[in-house]
Every structure is written in C-alpha cells, then in structure tokens.
Amino acid sequence: MSSGSRSSSEKVAGTPAHTKELDNKLEDPNIVDWDGLGDPLNPQNWPGRKRWSHIVIVSLLALVTNMAPTMCAPGIDAIAADLDIKSSVVSTLAITLYVLGLGIGPMLISPLSEVYGRLPVYHACGISFVLLLVGNALVRNAAGFIVLRFLSGFAGGTPMALGGGTIADVTILANRANAISLFSLGPLLGPVLGPLIGGFVTEGLGWPWIFWLLAIFGGATTVAAVIFLRETNPKILLDRKTTRLRTATGNSALRSKLTHPRSISPQQVLAGALVRPTKLLIKSPILLVMSLYVAFIFGTTYILFTTFTSVFEDQYGFTTATSGLTYLGLGVALLVALIINRTLGGRVQAARMKAHGTEQPRPEYRLLLMIWFSPCVGFGLFIYGWTASYRVHWIVPIIGTFFIGIGAFFVLVPSQLYLVDLFGSAGAASALGANNLTRFLASTFLPLAGPRVYATLGYGWGNTLLGFLALAFVPAPVIFYKYGEQLRAKTDMKKLLE
Image (cartoon, rainbow, N blue to C red; front, side, top):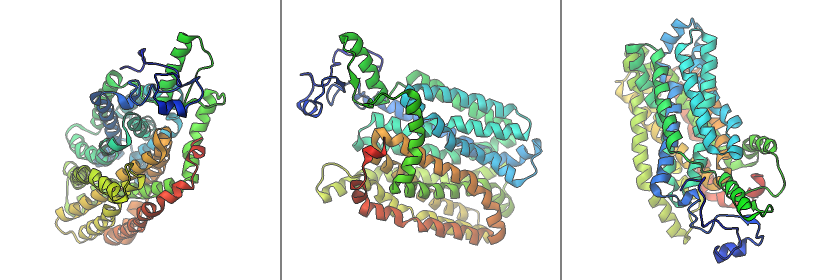
C-alpha cells in the first residue's frame, strides 16, 4: 500500500481497534501510532516483494556510487597527462577526493530526510550525481575535474547514509542480516568492480568514457528509484497519518507518537540532526571504536586501490587494461565472504540465543563473525607485501588480497549490523553517518601516505606495518562482545539520540 493512500484501519491510538498492549502503553488518546503490530502502513508489514525491491534498489544505488571512487584508478596516468597534473599527490587526490565527498555530503544532506522524508533526498541527490558525472566526462582542466570529483561524491554519499535507515525501516531485527549483507556489497564490491571495468574502458575508449559509463549506470538506478521507491521513514509516515486524521476528525490536538513533545522548527531539527552523528561519535565509545576500526581497514584498502596499478605494472609488467584484473582477488573474496555470512550468520545467532536461553537476539551476537575473520586482513597484508616485494608469481599477492577482502567484509558487515541493532530505526542513519564519515576521511587521506610508505619501507615492511596495525584492532570486537551489554545498560540511548 502506498504511504500516501488512505486506510480504513487508521485510528487514533487508544481506541478499541488497538491491541491491549498498545492501549496500556499509550494513555494519551491524542497520540497517533500504528494500528497494532500488523498495520499495513508500517513499512515492516509491506509485502516481501515490495520490501525487498527497496533493499535491492538502495543496494544498487550504493554499488554505483562506490564504483566511482576507483573506476578511474587504472586510467589516472592518462587523466594526469590530459589535464597536465604533474604531482603524484594531486593524482591521488583526483581519485580520493570523491571519497571525502562521500563522507561530508551525507552529514549535510541526510538530515533533510528527517524533515522531508528519505524519498525526495534519494531522488534529488541521484539526479545531481548523474549530472556531475557528465561534468567530469566533459571537463578538461585539473581544478574543475577535482572539484567535480568532490561534488559528485558529495551527492553520491546519500545511499550509503540513508540505506541503513531504509533497511531498518522495512525489516524486523531477525531478518536484517541478509539485507545488510546485500547493502554492504556496495562499498565492498564497488571499488573492486570499478577498476576492473575502468582499465579496459580507458585502454579501449579513453578515460572520459569511464564517467559516461558511470552516468549511464547512475541514471538507470535513479530511474528505478523514482519508479519503485516509496517513503519508508516512520516519522514522516506517522506525520502524514496524523495530518489526515486531523482533517477527518477535526481534532487539532492529535500528534504523532514520533513527534517531539516540544514544538521544534524544521531548522532546529536539521541543526540537531547535523550535530547528532558527531555527538554520537564522541559520547558512544562503541560507535567511536567501531568507526575507527572500519576507518583504518578501509583506509588500508584504499592504499591498495590507489597503488595496485603501479605495483603490478612495475613489478610484473601488467598493462593498463590487465592491471584492473588485479582487483579480482578482492572481488572473489567478497563473494565468498557473502556466502559464508549467509551460511553462518543465522546459525551462529540462533546457537547463541539457544545457549543463553533468550528469545531475543543481542546486538553483540553480530560480532562473532568479526572476531573469527577480521584477523585475515593482517594475514593477507603480510602475504601481499612480501610476495610482491620478492616478485613471487603474480597470483600469490592476489591470493593475499583475497584474505584482505575476507577480513574487510567481516569488519564492515558485522559492524553495520551491530550499529543498526544498537541504535534502531531512529538512530541508525546518524550512527552509520558517523561511521561513514570516519571511514571516508581515512579512505581519502591515508592513501596519500601509501607511496611514501612503500618508498621508505618497501612493499614488504610497508604492508607488514599496516598488517600489525590491523591486528591491533582485533581485540575490540572481543571486548564489546564480552562487555557490550554492560556498556549498553549504562547508556541512556534515548537521551543520546535527542
């Protein structure tokens, strides 16, 4: 049922149509809530096909916007030559400033979804993203190219910021893992597919076609979003329901359950929503540590993304086109990790629930797969670094990147599931926004140190340093698994989300 349609089942909370549980919970007859647990207007009660169409579309939006950071990496030498870029730092920034836009944009844009809904934000940013990509294809000066890269990332970050909230809107806790796994393929698989395609496109058609192709992909997903997506934000839906009931009943005292008890202007809501991710990052030790962990892992993978071309061209003689194939180790790893996660995720959670004698899963159960597989990042960096340094057959360092990909998946996916479970629909967007900001800041600026680290320490010791730093974070999920429930008990989540 469309969110804008009128339902005969719409009632004011507290009427006989509500369940006894809700009657006892809500004593104020002027508060408007869902009509019981099965209200068809609640996105979590939509038909499965409709709910999964939303999950698939936001996942595709995230995939396309995450292909853009690295799709031009194999062609950066051609871009630098055409745009007269002579500095290696500027060349790296031409790739990674897009990632900075991915981090900053949602901080400013995603709060609009709390005032106007998720749908108009998705559509406006999707159209802007495509237009900016067209600009990148046409521009012929370095400054314009870099500015457009940042702005396209600024608009392209919206699916990453709002996607977790959309998934929380349309899924119940028990069914969320598969949806988050699919959604997480965007930031994981996108940077792998991008250069794989970009290498052949650069050599065959020229680097501008990288951006024409991205614009085509982005345009197709944006059209699909316009056709199939509906509003899912429960606050917006209950606000609309309240407005309809005020008109139908003439009772101006009706108010949504999710409306703040004090009168707050849209400007104040926006200001508060802008501050909330930073506030959460500072005041929630779990969010801070998880965000730093994810940030380091992604910063490290972007060091690899921006140096694969030079490493394999210099060490193994790969061409521009074939250098894109070096990303396949990561790509295969992510697909294998997805299968492992789908196979083990539900079973591990069910086993823990049975062992603890509880019917409700704890958020900490999400961390078990991270505990088991995250050490693969350090192990893979050791293999990649030393085999590339000694020019062992090229397949061996790619096998090293396979282990890096496995570990990176099981850092990102469990951390996102954990944060969504912790903060719920009301706070998931802000928590993931803070997580994304730290991740994208690291992915922008850590790669600038990559060439210097490799020049100073070499591929072997340089990647060994990164590997040991990755292993230093491994105890974090172990600690949160053991003590997370106690930390949550001491935290006033409602106050934290105000």
